[in-house]
Length: 328
Ligand SMILES: Nc1nc2c(c(=O)[nH]1)N[C@H]1C(S)=C(S)[C@@H](COP(=O)(O)O)O[C@H]1N2
Ligand SMILES: [Mo]
Image (tube, rainbow, N blue to C red):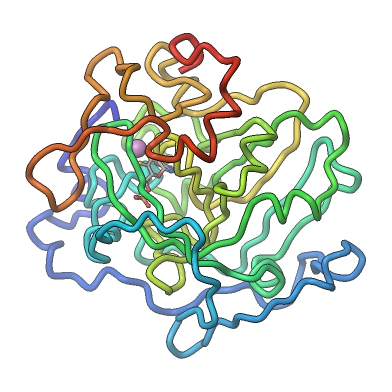
């Protein structure tokens, strides 16, 4: 967001940008954890009664029986190709085209998420168990980046609230925080010497508990009915559609419940420019650019940015006592 270097990919891989366009970038094989180290989600956690109706077909990497979204943005979808080739994912380079190339062979299996902090029982979740136990929904949401571009994406995921309820946070849990994998060997952008984005790894984000429990907030495991492409944050990422895109942290390996507000990556780097709340707000400009308009990918003329990215009806109540200029 602060730095733009078109030569990222070249620096990280030796591939010239001109070679990239024709490469087949989509990772079509499913990569799920099979058995092993993770504690299974199950009757002990009280979610055995959940109806996991959908399955992921191994052959097609497609989700079937997706529950249709009650929150359909009702807008033209941004083409799959754009969603998967114009990305922000600094672990794989700071240019938009870099993640699709650099994350291509990123291994997302096995994958586990540790859950700790203010919970009755800390535990480790296996990705495969998550996929089996939570009924998956399609959620068509606008995504508004703080850089003033936007897209419309049909995500596949499930409410974060469902997982939180199963984790049984204590009464002290006021916030939830997330971390992306830290593994510079697999995420070349995390090597500061080779190529410094200035970010303090691992990437981390957080929400207030009421924001995390809001029905709009999901953990996403796919898009366009398919397994999440690596460049979009496979195997599991957060989506908070009324906040700037940087809140929607990718490739999550840790969830922590805390009493105090957690530190978050962009606010740590530039606290005057990026806040903890990061609610999309056309009336609160970034110090270096306006937030009143945005460029929808594929469109020429700029659109007006909507308060809470158009989700005011669902979320404005949470901020009625908050000075949004101060707590941006
Ligand atoms: N771990 C991690 N998560 C991240 C980022 C990142 O660099 N690293 N970029 C964020 C930003 S700025 C945006 S706009 C969205 C972009 O998601 P997309 O590439 O799937 O469109 O991911 C967010 N999540
Ligand atoms: Mo962003």
